[in-house]
Amino acid sequence: MKLLHAQNSPYARRARLTARKSGLDIQELDVSKDPEARKVLEAAGPSAKIPGLLLDDGTCLCETLIITRYIDAQSANDLMDYTPKLLEIEGIASVLMDATYKRSKERLAEDGVPSPTVLKTETDRIARCYDALDARLSGKPAEINLATIAAISALGYADWRGADDEWRKGRDGLAAWYDAMMQDSDVAETAPVF
Image (cartoon, rainbow, N blue to C red; front, side, top):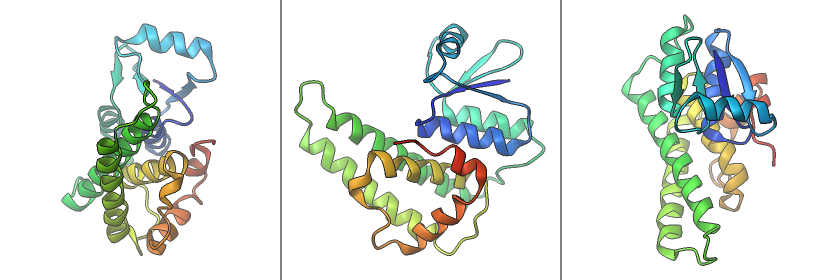
């Protein structure tokens, strides 16, 4: 299998961490650095979107959640027990990632005039997600599963695209949890470079 990704994509980071922790033999190809990998991605499926998981039979899976679930199903390393508490964390992290992405894109509006309504809506949503993750992850051990992978990816992305949020401020427990997770070599290696 080949995982087509870009270093700074939080969606791809989720897939990369899942692949690395699965124990499966999955080759990582960075389409942002390798033009040949970009061609593979574009030829593999109609979305040409990262991440993409190219299976040995030529099937290309797109969409992060589908990719992470597929990898987990193939792995003997059960990365998720699918309890409601873990699914809740994964969902909150997914919303945080999407809201951060949407706000970042809105700030770069093509007409140069971002929508104040969109910016406020997403900024408020982002703050609620930070608080929710703080409440759920403070004091928790640095364990890797699909929910914590999603949270790591969302918070790492927020460091880059939402630095002005200062998500650590007033959320010491979440910051401590994140710092503990960053001690894992795979987590550190997949962090966005900004």
